[in-house]
Amino acid sequence: MMSNLIRHSYIRTCSKPWVYALVLALLASCSPAPNTPETIATPFAAALPTSVPPTVAPPTALPATPTALPPTIPAPTAAVAEAPTEGAISPTDTATSAGYLVYQRPDGSLWRTGEAGQPPINLVDPTEPEALLPWAASPDGKTIAVVAGTGLWYQFHENPTMALWLVGADGSNPRKIQDLLPPRGVDLTPGGDDAFNLVPALTVHQQLAWSPDGQLVAFVSAHQDQVDLYTAALDGTVARLTDTPRLEQGPLWSPDGALIAYRTTTSFGTGAGWGDVAMEVTARGGGAPVMVMDDRKLTVGTEAVALPDLLWISPSVLIVGIADSAVGRAELRTLDTGTRESTMIFDAPYTALEWNDTTRQLAIAGTSQSLMQAGIEGRKLAPGLFTWSPEAGVPTQIERAPVEALAWTPQGDALAYSFVGEQSGLRLWAIGAEGDLKPLAAQPSSQLRWSLDGQRLATDTAIYSRTGQLLGDRSNEQPATLIGWGPQGLFYATHSTDNKQDVWLWDADTLPRQIDTQLTTSQLAGVVLVRQ
Image (cartoon, rainbow, N blue to C red; front, top):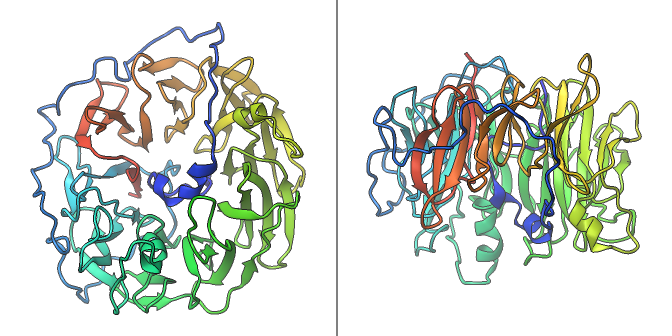
């Protein structure tokens, strides 16, 4: 099963704000190549319905006034949820036959789609308008971990609340696991340490992570007066993993669930990057770090301000991306937690990464066209598509034109990538009997999402078959925000009125079906697959 680069089960653009202060435009303007696909089948959104179809009931009206805590979530109980089946599920698990979409409404409530023809299911009642509730689904898709509360998102309240909750994916058995705020309270003085570091650590930088066996969820909390990393079990048992004045963020489990990697910092900075950024690895049960990477010097001599990418490629080896403040993403290294050795993989700015666990290959989109055109002096630039494997040691160049996006099929047998330059478009790099490179489309795309069977590719404005046939087209509309594929089809969002978004489902056999409307954002929306 192919594993994607630090791709959680939802879109979290708020989790790396420093990245967006550094990253330049992904795609430069380009002219389409003359060859275009010929056949058009079901329209992607050529005639979008203006309202929810009558066969799909919209969510019930929700009160606008936030409450102290989600009212449907009771006090903690000793009940133990059914233990998930061992083994992780990702959006690339083709053995699954069921799935659902989780998304957030403008009042801060959390919802999931129901069965076909059924209304959405409420997971968390309204918390606070514009709140962004971090959530993560267990590997079997049956339990949702979510951080909920009031007073720390839309506006600061005198008595804010925040806690980690677990709830069944069907809305059943909601229970509070752990309050996250320090017992002393929170000092929300503008510019103060709590407002500058503690609140962001628990909200916009909070990343929940389930262990591969589904028994533990990792999270950060300040309930013991400082931000530290913890795990919570399904029965509500909480264990502390770290005890330092540093801010731990972004836990990432090793494939066997024995180790957790995470970033550390002393502050979240003011746009130029985190302060004293580093990376540590600790054991599942906590204790002294197994490994600490605090070397922030790049090979060119500049100081790193961020570690934008962490990726486990084996139970003991990590790939780490290192960025400086001048040109953004800069170089890649491997870190072996057993030998504690570090090896350079790629020593130039890169745009995107995708790991293929089936073939043990890392796809690297090199220096972007925008950086190439910027004429950076005294710095190595390497546009194109590269692949690297632990056995080969040295990256192999597949494409020389600047590559801006890439995606392996779930089966790991082919890689789609978008390239720009004198010619632009999409290509497929196939492994095995299909041969090497072949064109898919003449239009590049900043988003590439494969269907679960690896036979359909969604882009900004279209859906293509693996052979390049145009299956759905919305090139005359604004680009869609692609959320992900489920067994039902492709979930995506479009802009409606007043900067709101509508969420749709494209299933290839019918017109797009509207799931919900007038959402403030879809950045935390995600598809969860359920193992049957």
